[in-house]
Amino acid sequence: MELTQATVNDLLARLGPGDGYMYLPGDLEPQALTDLLADRYGAPRTLVLDGFTDPAVDDSRGAALLVPFEDRAVRIRAWAYGDQWVGAGTARDAEGVERPVLVVAHREVPEPWAVAPDEDEEVDWMERLRQITGWTQPAQRPDVDWTEVESRLGTALPSDYKRMVETFGVGAFDGYLDLDQEPWTGLGDGLLIWAGTEHEDLYCWRADGDDPDRWPVVVRSVDNKDVTFDCQAAEFVCRILVDPHHPFTMARYFDTHWFMNHRMSD
Image (cartoon, rainbow, N blue to C red; front, top):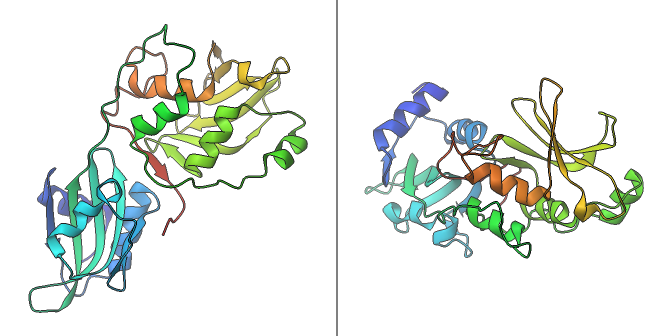
């Protein structure tokens, strides 16, 4: 079987939107399938390695992918994608032969609740972001040396942004909004850039005042126009994910939301 992204599309279409799995031809290279899926969905999580299941695997980490194989899974990698788990690797068939497999399962994602314009100021927007994206993995970068980063930049940074980087690490919300691991300058006008999209919009702060937690978010669009929002970064991301009326909404493109992690997490 020649593996291409078109082949993967065909295989996933055969499995359908619900729970399903298939054994693939023995001459298929499992790593090639994993690489194609990683190009599409980001870095996977290892559920089973050499026949041993990660003890941390539960319903929130893709356990449903292992159900069809009982104790026959040999190596299974998993991706969270919207309201679906996708898995690939190898498992033993009924005759005990190790074969490549592709498996999908339904993924429970917390309902993204509406965000009212007059939301209480005490809302923990980072916790809300975790809920909206269904994020259950441990903190990806808990040991960032923010003292060194802030010293090099010459300014303190907003606390919610630092929590975002520590929690999610390298990757993109909905595979679209890339979270910068360190803010950067280059636009002038006192703007500090913390994220960007594949449409080349840049998400910034206007670094005015001594309290970075009060810096407004500024969107520098591809046509070089600025739009200011009086909120913090985590709140801004929550709103563009779920509010279909936000001027920079992503809700019109995605019904469920996730964070595509770009680094391997075993």
